[in-house]
Amino acid sequence: MHSLKDELAYFFSGKGMPYAKVSMMVAIVVTLLFTAVFSNNYAKDVPVAVIDLDNSKFSHELVEQIDTSPYIKIKDVLNVPVSPKELLYHDSHLAVLYLPNGLEKNRYSNSKNNIGIFYDNTNAAQTGHLKAALNTIIAIENLKIGSEQVGALGLSSEQTEAIMHNISLNDRELFNPTDSSSNSTCLGFLYFFGSMFMVFATIGMIPRLRLEHKWQEELLQGNPFSLMLRLVPYVISLTGSLIVGLCILRVVGDLNFAGNYLLLLLSILMLSVSVGLMSLFFGWGAANPGVAISKMILFIPAGFILGGASGPLNILPFWAQTLSNIFPLVWGYRLSRDVILRGASFMECGREIGGFMLYIGILAALICLRFYRNQQALLAEEGGFPQEELSPETL
Image (cartoon, rainbow, N blue to C red; front, top):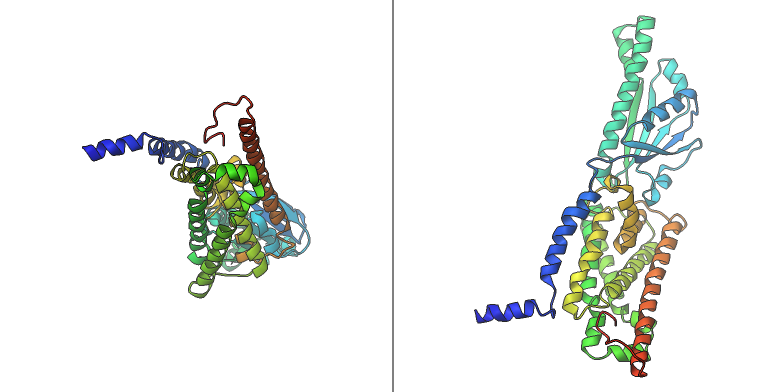
């Protein structure tokens, strides 16, 4: 009983992780927030690009019919040949429909039509409803073609069978045709656990400096950039560990690496820096490192869930996909899919790299603002100006 009494005193002292609050917060977040995030039970309005080389009345009608499906949204229609891979970069489309030349001619001459469909298979779960919807639409179109011509021409059973299968859908799964876990689940967990343990190592940095009585010296003699430089060994360690993990997945597993090595290194380095900066920001006002670690749940698991590593992104509502951009892992997953699996080049990843750098700049600016605010508060206190007692949260 003495041990229990002692532990209860520590439990409510505020010196360790406030587990009573954290456990309640976890229950509320999981039941309320994620219920809203995963409110859709199917992939709605999956973005699809169409390469329409026939550009005929029939091809336009077919595209319009496909667009009426609740599972599909025709995002772009192109009338010139384009590599399907380029249209799948940045998760901008999940499939590319290829309508060849002579589609309308073959439709009315009872010749066979072959339509190509290229699926982004970086996550096999994200195209399931799309495949079913397209197959249903093509079957209905074939039935309509057959009913129009069989009754009018009085054809034989063999000719009827050929007409009833006028349009055939030839699909091809890109980037991960074998549904390998190395290209999806293992890759996702590698980034998740690597980032999580870096946060464990860095989120208590400022509370540790405060407990070691070094924080005032850092504020008075240093600057926010010297504070951020403390992240260098952690950034190098995370970058190196992720590269080693990817090498193991490539050699031992069957990781499909199709990109540029330098671009991969840049993307991992930016992920490491952004995780470190976010970790500093969230752990800033904690009373001690133990309390700071509890704040990890605010941005690492959410990035894993909303980054497309644990499930398809297209089942998330639009607001959740927009909100996901505040988490560093989301940017890391997005770039890793483009570089590692889709083989995108520097120019093709330019928009994502620029956005990621802007995101890192915003995090660094927030840390600078908070640092100078704390510095001014400390100078005001030491200069004898009226100042309220400085708490760990203020500093």
